[in-house]
Image (cartoon, rainbow, N blue to C red; front, side, top):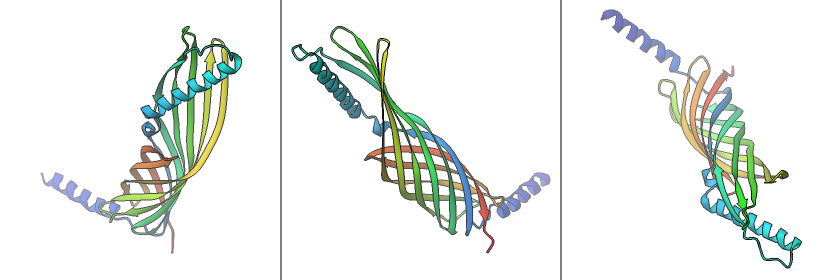
Length: 232
């Protein structure tokens, strides 16, 4: 019993020393891995709008080639794959016990809407639209006081994002592909919890919300970091 008590006491003393970390004036490198949720970018109304747009375009093309014919009555069935894998790399600077800044590159993964389009004769046209999103962001972090190496935080900032999109139409053995890009400058905010040891290694669990063209993109990610103390 005494042996167990001594071990527990030693563990408590050691961990108090290890966890009592001064973060001020330090630089850290980080990498993270997480899950992207594009559900706000692929709502049913968005899918319905895509259906209407596709059918309208097909009808217009049909009338150009067959001006005297009745429309073939296209219909579309589309589904969304709105979960992706996010990866990020970055660097941060802690200039105050409770304040830090961080710059990183964020890869959010891809969102895809795909399905089939049919006419009245049951001829089928395959359709898919894939968007790959990433960007560079800069954020400010406000930390709570550290307790045994742990602290909570909130962050806010902005991201310069870009999206590469690809649309594919497949009919019988024929395939047509269209590619285009768009980009923008939007806000980002989030929060989470961080652990940092005196060895310099740490980890965070973070939820973040990105605003991409007025549509929300949610991220949950785990981060590993290494902190370099700056001698002053």
